[in-house]
Image (cartoon, rainbow, N blue to C red; front, side, top):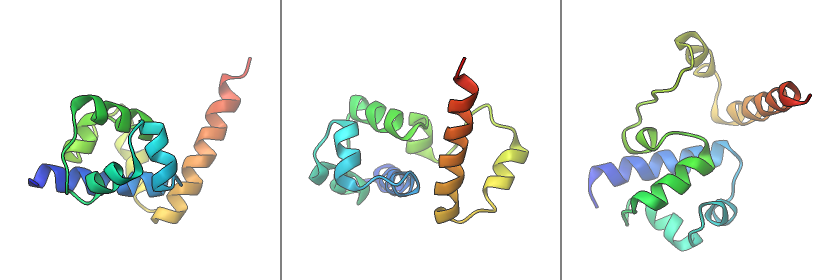
Length: 108
């Protein structure tokens, strides 16, 4: 397929792994088959806007980020620079920690 699908597939795989999802587990979240997810991650197949939306929602990123690699979130550049200091394994732990902090902050 085209380069947009290659890049998008790589980002999806990387984000899935950072978040600790197996291919099968994430396929359930995205409501697609594990085989189709594999084909997306390897750039063998394209995907619909609906599938892109489900994948982006499941990975908690924008559809734009998946397609382009450009992250247009509200996060301060300093925070992003700090996150870039971590390797993928460490980022998984940081992500889990941030989710716990968020959950603690939403309890009332």
